[in-house]
Amino acid sequence: MSLSRKRKKELRKLQNQAQKLWESQQVIVGEASHVAREASRQLGNYSREQVVPQVQETYGRYAAPYVDKGVAVSKQVVNKGIVPAAGAIVGSALSVWDAATDTRERLAAGRAPASIDWSDFAKRAEKYGNAASKKMAKRVNAVSIPAPKKSMSAGSVIAIVLGIAAAAGVLYAAWQTLRADDELWVADDPLRAPDA
Image 1: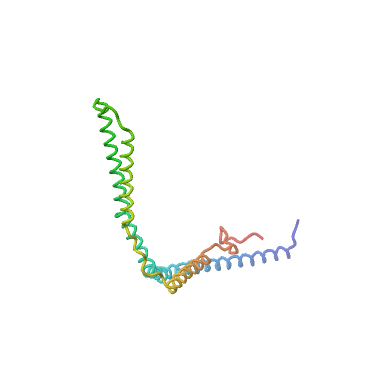
Image 2: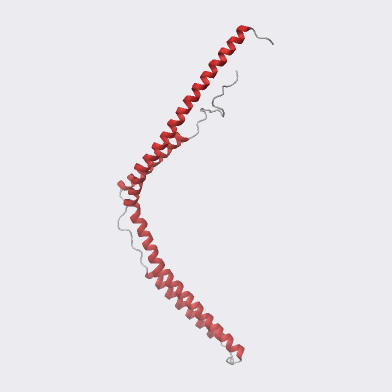
């Protein structure tokens, strides 16, 4: 298929125009990427200078006292209730183990009593078990958990909600700025124009 000179000239002209258009698009894409990088940097600065200190200050004012109280109450419950109760249980178990070991050794040595009264043994074991349970219950109940003195006001709740909404807005704006846009297409070879 042979093209006339006029058609060849028009095709060359069209190819030159396409080349110029392609080069100008590459310049525009480069400028857009520069603007996106600068916006990302500015967003990071704003977040570091404005948002993070505000969130830390709000947390310190409203949430930190309650977290500190929770930690203090947990330590008190563990130190004054659970640890002593567990110690009593472990001590009782070890004393029962020692008694059983002693009895086993006497039986092995042939120094056992003539007859063992198993019902008396069961009654004493139940008595010691009940005593240990009561002692543990007293220690666990002895720990008093102080009630919080003041609840958060409506203004505090509104401030926290507004802070969260502001943080969400900043994150959404950052996501919109930095996400990959399907309409922007950058070629692998930025200086080569597409073939006509």
